[in-house]
Amino acid sequence: MRSEPRTDFMRSTDLSDLQLGLKLYGTRLKLLYRLKREGFYVRMHAYEYLVGDNKGFLALIFLEPWANRCLILPLRCDKK
Image 1 (spheres, rainbow, N blue to C red):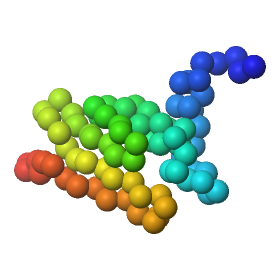
Image 2: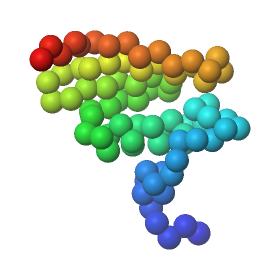
Image 3: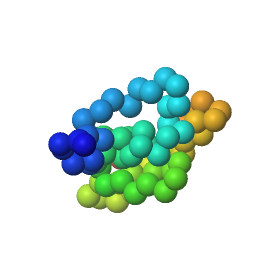
Image 4: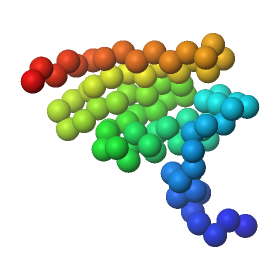
C-alpha cells in the first residue's frame, strides 16, 4: 500500500511514458497538475484543456495522442 496520497504521487511523477504517453488518464492528470503548479487555472475534459489565469482564458489545448499531435489554440494575445 502506498504511504502518500494518490494526488501527491501523481504530482511528483514525470510525464514521459514512452509506451503509452498521453493516452493514459493518469498521464493526462499529471499534465493537469503540472499546469496548475505553474499557477494556471485549468479545466480538463478527456483530451482537452481550458487554460486561464486571473485575467481570463489563455488557450485551449487539444491532445491527439493516437496521432502524436497536440494543438494549442491561443484565446488571448497579451500586448506589452
